[in-house]
Image (cartoon, rainbow, N blue to C red; front, side):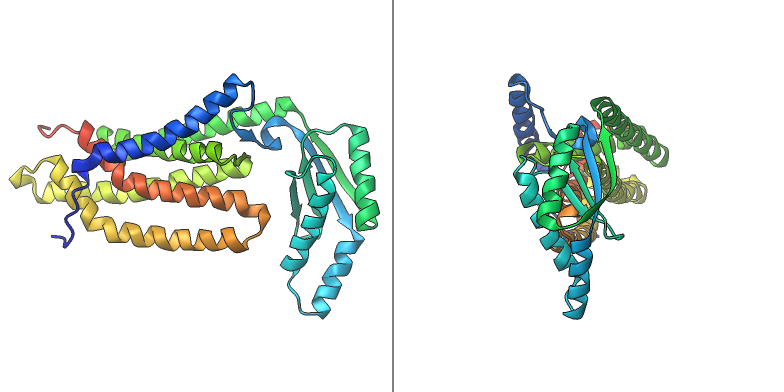
Length: 313
């Protein structure tokens, strides 16, 4: 039936322990920060409020024209220009600000909340160091808006998780849905723990990446569960235990899972290396989340099914 015969289910406690240790490290760091009255996670200005400024620089257009004559890519110009802006922002203690150059050649800067005088100082400094600029937009995101956005993000993740639980229950059985939900919670906790350990900024891009990871992870889990169901029907006369069916199904889909994940991670890894700073957080969260999702589809979802399933059904 399959040339592989890895005993995955027999070591399910080991797989659970590996994930639990990583999650506990992240949770411990968040707890320590909470006791120190520090933010438990590195929330971006989308969630804690801040200032957004959009400028148009004459110098940037000049560099584009020069790059075109020298056959240089715009991306090289953008990276250098953003580095120079960040060095200026560093003088104001804002080196971690988000800087992005849009397709319309506009420079978007997101910083922590600044008063009007600080905004003017930054603007003057940018004009002095980077040349003439045009102010297109200055906005402020208040803490109340950030709090509301945080609440909505949590609700979106909750609703998506429940919807996936109902879908798996409808396609298979309730115990399959619960097992898939456990795997999804695992993926979310692993990703959040990673953000806690490595101080990754929690922004709307992080939430978008997390939702993408949940959708990707459930796809792999469904493939394994579908094979479990097929094998159960095909081998029902032999009345094989679910632990055997789960092992068989994982071994049958193992190469497909590895190949799919490897190619996906290769693309995301390329974007992570060559895609620039503006999408770095999104790609990093995707990379970690998809790796965790692949792990959970093999080592968490199916062992959870084995632990919850009753063979006498």
